[in-house]
Amino acid sequence: MVVNKWKSIIENGNSKKLESIIDNNAVFFSPVVHTPQKGKKLVLKYLSAAVDVFKNTQFRYINEIIDKKNMYGEFKATLGNIEVNGIDYIKWNNELITEFKVFIRPHKGLEIIWFKMKNKLEKK
Image (cartoon, rainbow, N blue to C red; front, side, top):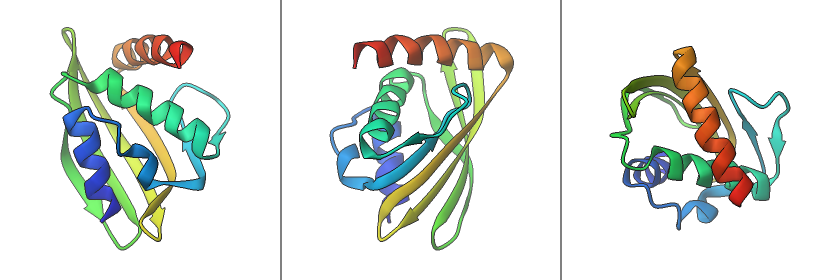
């Protein structure tokens, strides 16, 4: 299942296999950026940066609701001294991710992730 491949990528901090699980017309919805990021190239850019940001943060999914083509996964991670809690909504078709939405709390957690993501995205 594609969601298991994604979980392996994010939990192990290795984005090398990311390209093989993203649909060409995928859309990424950031908790910070106001417009959807459309297309495989942009989705890969954002998800690769997220994998880098969450590397070595003890990222883990703590609750999941999964059906045939959707997953709502509640996650936790620790960045510095801030525990971040969030939800990933992942939709897929034909074993490729077609939609990815991220919700994050608390506000301080969102700020630190936005700062780190911004730095990673500027380098990519």
